[in-house]
Length: 418
Ligand code: LLP
Image (cartoon, rainbow, N blue to C red; front, side, top):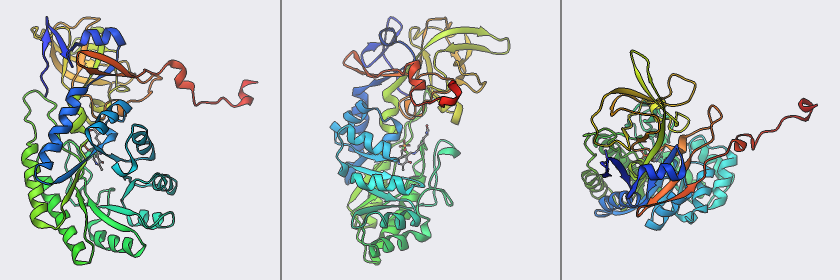
C-alpha cells in the first residue's frame, strides 16, 4: 500500500492537500496522480523490456478515462480492449489501430464486424468466433487466446484461465484452431493467455507460461512461426498496510527466461491494468453522518457502491484514512458506509479511525483500477467526477453527471402522456 505525505495532518496527493481537491471540485471525486501513473507504467515496462522486446498493452477496462489513456499513449503504451466501445475510446484518445488488440469473449457478429472494420488486431477466443470472423474479413493477422488450465486472482470471480473457463480456446483445440485460421487465409501472429486478476503469487504465471511455451512449440512443429507471446495481465498490488508487493522484477526475469530459452519467439506482450492505475488514484468522499448503532459504529459518506463497487462485489479491502486527520490517534472502530439502500453498501468494515466528524474528507486508497469504470447510476445517482493532479494542481477530466443525464436516453410512450 502506498504511503502519503501530509502537512499539518492533511494528506497530500500529487502535491495537493486532499481537502483542497475536495473543496474545489466537490465530493465524491476520483483523483488521479499523473506522475504516479507514468511511474507505474515505466516500472512494469522496464522490468520486462530489460530482458525481451516487450510491448505493454494497458488493459483499459481498469480505467478508460480519455486523459488517462492520453497519458499512457504518450508513454508509448499499447492497449488491450474488450469491447468496440473500449476500442473506439482508445482511438479517440489518440491510439492508432495497430497499437490496439481486441480480446473479446462471446463476441457477437455485429461487434466482430465493427471491430474488424476499425483495423485492430483480433485475439480469437473460440473456434466459433474464428469461423464467424472468416465470413466478415480474412487475410488479417490474428492472435489466439488459449485457456492455459491455470487460474489465479484475488477471488473466484476474477480467475479466468483455469480448465473449463469461459475464456479462451480450450487447450486441446489450440493448435487445430490456429491451423484452421491459416486454412481460412488468416495470418496467426501470436498466442495469448490471461490467468486472472489481482493474484499475488508468481507460480501460476510460471505454470501458465509453461503451457503457452509448449503451444508455441507445437505450432512451430506444424509450420506456424509466431511473432509474439502475450501473457495477459493480472499482476496484483498490495491493498493492505504492510502487505508485500509482488516481485515484478523477478516475475519478469523468470517468465522471459522461459520464453527465450523455450521458444523461437522473441516478442512479448503484457496486459497490466490494475498495476498501472490502481495506486495512482484515490477516491475522496465526505463524511456526512456519524452513527453509533450500539453493536457497530458507522461513518456515513457520500460515496456508495454506486461509486466504488469492489468492496460490495468482491469483499475487496480498500484502505481508508480521514484525509484531514492523518497521524491522529484512533478513537474507535467504524464501518464506512454509503447512501445506497442496501445493507451491503460498505466501503470498509471495522476500521480504526480518529474521531470521525461530519465534513471530514474520507480517503479511499487504491481506487484507480476498476473504480470509476465499474461505477453505476444505481439509486438514480449521477456518476461522479474525476480530476487529474499534477505538480500540486488539479484539473477536471470528467464532469459529474447531472440529474437530467439520468433521463437522457429514456422515452415515455406518447399514449402514457395522454
Ligand atoms: N487482460 C485480460 C484479457 C483481462 O481480462 C484483464 C482483466 C486484464 C488483462 C487486466 O488484468 P489486471 O492486470 O488489471 O489484473 N473488476 C475486477 C477485475 C476484473 C479483471 C478483468 N480482466 C476487480 O475489480 O478486481
